[in-house]
Image (cartoon, rainbow, N blue to C red; front, side, top):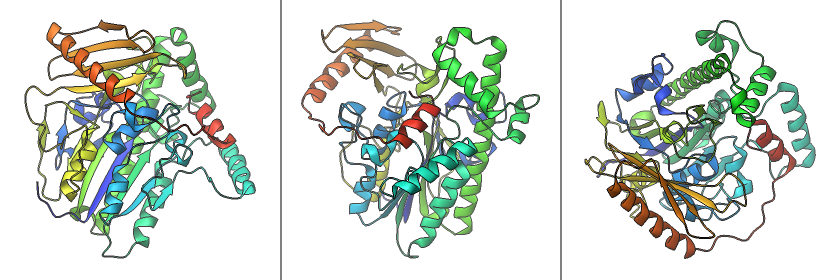
Length: 421
């Protein structure tokens, strides 16, 4: 596909599952902005993340490679990002977010001219301590969407008018603990819940899911939906700001999520390292300047994002995914993977999705044993078996970085607050 594009804009939301958006059939009006965007975009109804949690999902999104080769054993980025490719092509590159797992501590600033991860690495120790004290006072675990918007727009405004840019904004608002502002809480829940109550409930749901009552589960969903509505409006404000600057009509815009979130469907909450729909089925919108309303039901992968961008800017690079403009066929299969829960786990999980079926398996890396489950057919089991064999050989042929992780106290605190630890 040959299209003249000045800019590439990638917006991703953390832990945003597709089936809680109105335009994906949800019963609540959670996403009026994205609903409108869908009317002028290509919307993929069966898009899946390459993994189920940020440490593997974002590397896949940014590199177009499966996590087993995109990151090393310590989750440090070892593959080139699309930002690097676009930088080489002459684009200015900026990334804005506040998730510690995809920060400079793990090498995710690679290829970005401006990379704001909200963690103040490299600054004076007193600055970091002051930031930490302020964050505690405000009960703040991440930068809200307004801050991400303001920082990224300031960066855009600092560029020369003729400079093309690649921008990645990653929003954390839909990630737990779910603490929407009060006016959003009241959209779906009678009254409001304090941040401390919301945090306590979220942490208990992760640690002791069996203790969550039906009423508490519904409260978690109400708060999550409120965060979606809040984030949706902030995305709307960002798009309005781009239109005001006459930038949107010259840009490729892709909106997606790194993974979803669970609410007890398989007896767990949040997004542990499984591959069920609730934590891998993500929204995906692609908007070109002349795009019209189009819906694609063929399965797509977040691996396809890098391939799509590369094709449109003429990069010529090869990726595990394929251009989202070329996926509309009946029998496409997309694959997912995730390491086991513990850092030293010898398990790796794999799954595949077709338009009509699915298959899951676990592989013991010590013995090589495969255990399959929930396979729609023997044919799909055979295809997943072949895919696992390919990935194992590919993974064994790659050498990751041996550099030891150095994560400071600020990162540790935020990870704990976000429920990762």
